[in-house]
Image 1 (cartoon, rainbow, N blue to C red):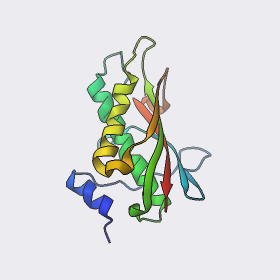
Image 2 (tube, rainbow, N blue to C red):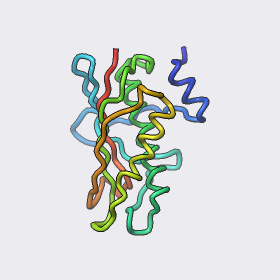
Image 3 (tube, rainbow, N blue to C red):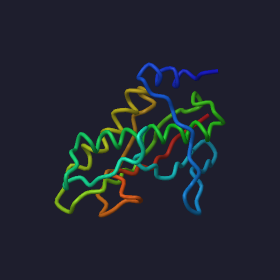
Length: 154
């Protein structure tokens, strides 16, 4: 059975991917009561990793696309945490976005908007959240963006 959220995603042309296995000694999410903590999701699109450095050849628009890819991966992890029923998602609480950027790049929030805007478009008020957007000198595998999240489920 397709969840209402997944139907909304389909209307946006988005199919959630299967969740990948962790690449190191950690778990992709931890559930404590009705809160799900999702490990950082790196920018990975249909054509593979989205690599680059903001302020050094990568545009803010391209960075926002990378952040949107992270949002899709975050929702895929939440679906896994909810045993396949994404309609159990009650609220996106907090996101922390890391942007692979030069020391003088200051538009990290505009990059992470790619994730935030997508979550609100896909989830409505459920997707409105608190957030941080910070610079990183480098990210795993040279990706442009990594985002972790905290979610409330039922």
